[in-house]
Length: 138
Image (cartoon, rainbow, N blue to C red):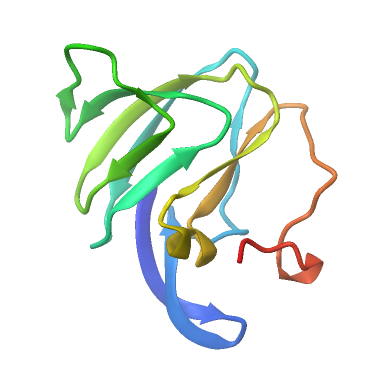
């Protein structure tokens, strides 16, 4: 996942938007997993701000930082601060079916687009998101 930013429009006003893979919520595709999968994700921060990425419903194991393998005691977390220019590889077991948020815990960044869903095959939600529903993160 490439974490970044761009200038764009929100509710008709120009502003800084926070992106995942060059898209903003709700237009960021969900990370789709199957129950029991061992999932590896790479976070790469291409912005000038820190992004404490928080995965709901799961714990991540940090595998490496900037290509250096993690050693010593296992580093389990549900929130990982990715500083400017840093690259982390993490893994987690998809063992909690549902539709979960993965977002920047700098809540201004989440409000302005840095949110995506972790979704399980065959699991859906009756809830809708986006401006047309009135169900928005702000």
